[in-house]
Image 1 (tube, rainbow, N blue to C red):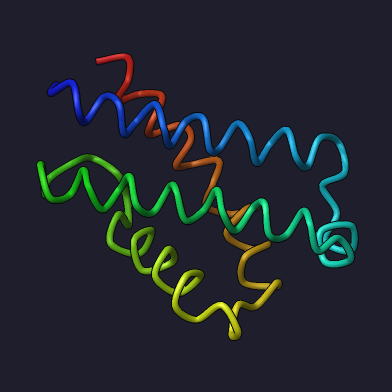
Image 2 (image 1 turned 135 degrees about the vertical axis):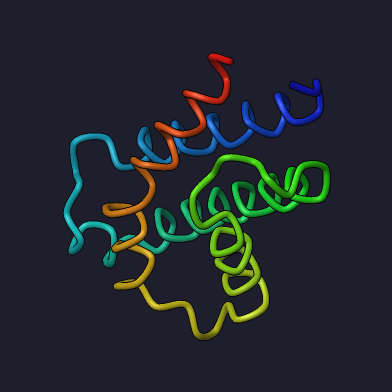
Length: 111
């Protein structure tokens, strides 16, 4: 694996770990929705994840990350559609998709 791809994978892993630390044991939608600082911090981490995936796709379009293009699209939506970001959608991504991405990144880093 190329060093720059490994660096992007580490960046993604760090962003996911940061999200996990921000939420700690308060994994409740109401806590997330009521805390603007938390929402903005998580949105920033999602931007970083999306940008790292985008850079990896430019180097290796076949990178083994499910829905890689959707990850990049999420980044674009958060950045360019900041006024249309839906907390319910972001929360669904955090709960339903981020754990799988974390696992895939971990697997890639093991190779």
